[in-house]
Image (cartoon, rainbow, N blue to C red; front, side, top):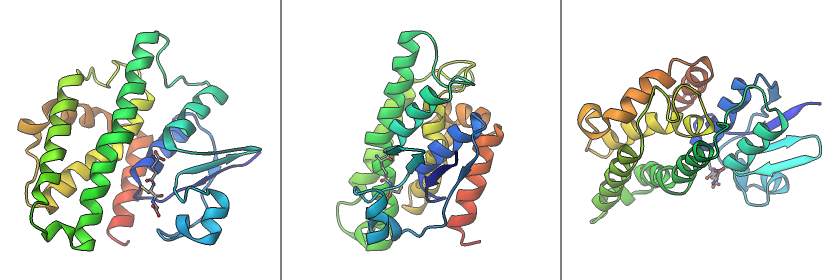
Length: 214
Ligand SMILES: N[C@@H](CCC(=O)N[C@@H](CS)C(=O)NCC(=O)O)C(=O)O
């Protein structure tokens, strides 16, 4: 049975799912779609919420990156991407939720503001302050060794991989580039390890190529 993933190469949420698929060795098809597709009549017929990623696996049809990732973990358990220990599992989920509900949307706000003129409006600097607050919070919650939950690569690691690239890129584009050693020493140590994984390197290369229009 073919797994189909509707995705955009530069979407941090889509990248999470592609990393999970790659880590588990699940082949999939990814129809070529544009940024406008999710909210087009065609896209809404696939996902009425008008968002990607969206996964079709037989009669299973799912949106929301973390729901998709957890479905893949349950349906294709090897290799495991959630720890066995219940406290560690909860921590992985907490980090993923932090990404999807706080850091990810903040990065989207900063990204969109570059093209819709908001970045030039008075007071927009607060949105960059908020990014720095979220980074400080994240730093206080992690102790990479080398991944978030130790030696096991988990769904939480997949969640943040492309977002790291956006943190660096968008803080610079808004004129307040992160100093990786000062502002996110633990996260940058984590990224040095995580970006070595072929699953992560592949989605990051694809995202960078899409962003540069190549
Ligand atoms: N919480 C959702 C967020 C998905 C999301 O915001 N996707 C963006 C791409 S990064 C999208 O589809 N945007 C198209 C639109 O809003 O029209 C998830 O984790 O999957």
